[in-house]
Image (cartoon, rainbow, N blue to C red; front, side, top):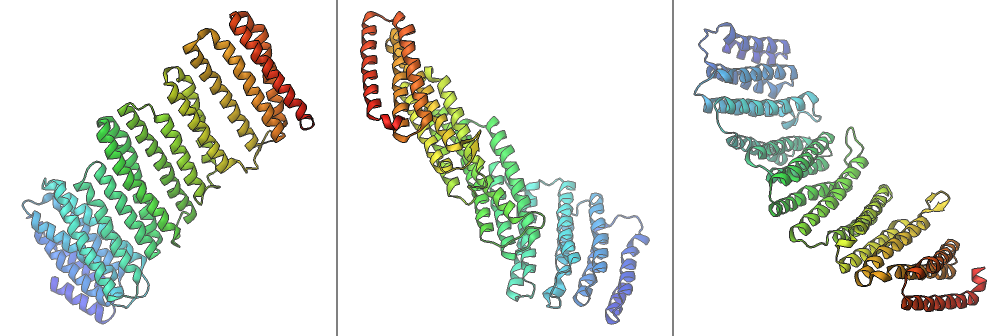
Length: 529
């Protein structure tokens, strides 16, 4: 029957008779099943099929008959996958047979393109190439599973197959074939095998790092070949990498690892993962690659946000863990400085206007930080507390200058910059009240009310003077009201609770302040009006 099948193949080529080749092939594949004695010689069966598939390869050199190729591939694949479970002691022979099938159907789809007979890739051929890849992976997995061999040795198989594909791709490059994309198709499959391989060799963060690098390599191939499909594969690989990074390297490892080893592992892994995302973003910035179902701009924005937000969150988390580990009590300050750094980087990026909301989020985080410091001020060192506030005001002012100073946004008919400036003044007033209260209470508890009144008067004067100098009506009004409230508090609350010496001091200070304020008012009367 093998001779008849060969003869049918030769006749089909000679007379361009596809049907003759197909019927001959069906007869060739059907013969061993029809004449089976039930002995279970599956190695002999697959060896016979190997010869038939070599005949398909020979026919493919002369004729581009996709149906014939798919038919032979389908029957061979089903037989190989089904028969492996019935074999015993044939591991090496089966491995050679599976590798042979893989090699044949990596060549069959593109043999005409390689010989320069075709200038356009056939989708059916590309699908056959990748179907062969999937079947090879499954066949070898079934083989290793059936014979109970550790999967770490499976990596040897994937590396050998990837090496073969790399040689295949290099030959295509040297032949200077008409279809340049064919080189990238074969190269992409070799990288796909290399993506699979680390799962059998590495564990933990090492696997995440390898996947991150390989995802970047796949995206590089996509940009060089301008092939949309490979771009999607690269995005899928990035997605799997980021998902593994979040679940296993950030959350799961934190539960089971000690703090210092976890910090080291997270720092290294984050460097590669976030670095690969940033490198991918840079590649797309310089490329004209268009993705099939997603806009290129959206992909670039997503990669930028993943890089930016990921770097910020990891930096903040590492700072928190380090400060807790060494009991530095500086996390609040470091976190605010990180916000300033990332706000600056965001302002310098191409997406500052598109993701303007991030500046608002940064301000929100700063306010939460401020509130936390207010609630914990009694348990903090005074110098640390004061430094916290100085850094807070500096960073808020920095972000305000970067993003909001020239903003035209209005809320309730008020310009956003003015509202933010007013909120900053309010936070300053709250902090000074809390800080002065705790400081005075620490050294002279009886003088706390007196100190608070004095603070209110000085703060009110500052607002009033600033309002006159800058001609800001609301500042003058708030300053005047605060001074008036402080004076009423001094006469009706403080005097009744102060010793004689404090009363005299309070009167002298109030008198000096009111005299100075009156003088300033007369001097700037026209401005005040």
